[in-house]
Length: 372
Image (cartoon, rainbow, N blue to C red):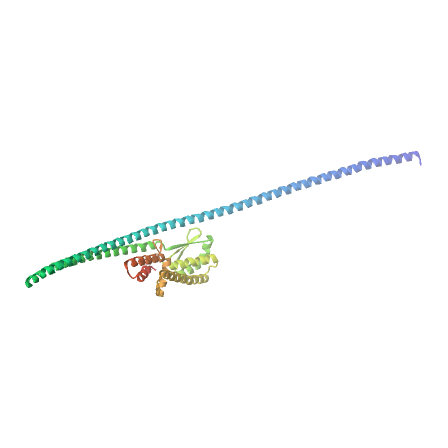
């Protein structure tokens, strides 16, 4: 091999080595650049993913806070409603207690007046006994005087005494008739006043002839009305009660002068609303069931009241009417409770006066039976 050829080979090898070196460096730079680009891409994707997760987390947190806030506000509103209802009930109870206290004070005053009257009668009886004793002593003295007279003188004295006694008896009889007339006039006046009070009480009761039934939502009003009003007509026909659906939120009104029918309608409507199935057949079924339940409940209430007072052998029709007083009010007072109170007071006063206590109890319990 010539020197020139060897030299060319060496030059070629040197150039190849230098070219390979530069080529390897270039490839390495390209790999580094690619790795850096990939790293930047991954970081950008990671940032985007982190931003997305951050936004979703914030959105979920806001939604959770909103739901919790709405729940708390709803709970606060519900508690506020319950508190308002409790306040109304408390005010009504306070008014009822004040009326009861006033009635008790009036009854205590009546008992006091009765006791004073008894004391006056006792004093009057004692005075009459003293007068009778005095008259007997006077008659004895006159007899002793007459014993010393002649027949004619004794006859004249007897006539004079009889004339005097007759005048006195006539005066007492006239006074008794006058007192009786005054008492009769007073009794009639009281009867007229009592009749006026009863009429006024009846007018007061007519103002309380409605019941309000709460609803879970206003949507329930449409279900109560039914298609073309079928449900509401079926309900009013089955109960005999007017069902009033107006703009009052979440409530309907039942209107009827018969408190028992109104109570049946109220219970039946509450059952229908709770059950959710409202159609004519179901309405008739529930109304019949509630009617039977209420009849049984009224009978049990009346029997319990009679048993508590020791009154037995009441006629079944009287038991039925007495039970209806459970749902009758007068001056906001329950009539059955009022009748029991009257029976108790009658028994107490009757015992003090030595009268027929069982009869007075029965009279007191049944004194308002006509209002059933």
